[in-house]
Image (cartoon, rainbow, N blue to C red):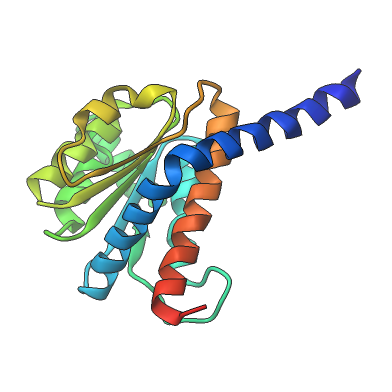
Length: 194
């Protein structure tokens, strides 16, 4: 019985990836071009999320600054979820919903990209970060699920919404990781060729 349940997890994940490919291929390509244009214009990517999505933001930044699958010069990216002094200081002195917005205000420049990762789409700190990015004339790329939530409605023209067509957090996060890998691969191929 347990083995059947485990096997079903694999099947469900695979089924969602096929369904997501139908709706996300074009917007992921568009997002990759935004990232490429930002990087080649001297800009940077600021990535953020909460919980597992914070880990995804860190992994994305690590693959941009270090490498994905091939050697190349580092690309400018920063995870906003890694500095505990900044996070706890802002959380303590202001509010938890300001932990990313304050960093976007301090570090973001026009033409930079804010990469927001959330399965629920309702995190107040991510909504504040999106608002701060818009005030800085930054483009927002949002990875969501569950219909996009408040994050989906906070996006404006020129932003890119990558909404996984599912309601289960675990499945959404699995597709988010695949999307992040696709973005890294697309940027590398655009920079380095096949």
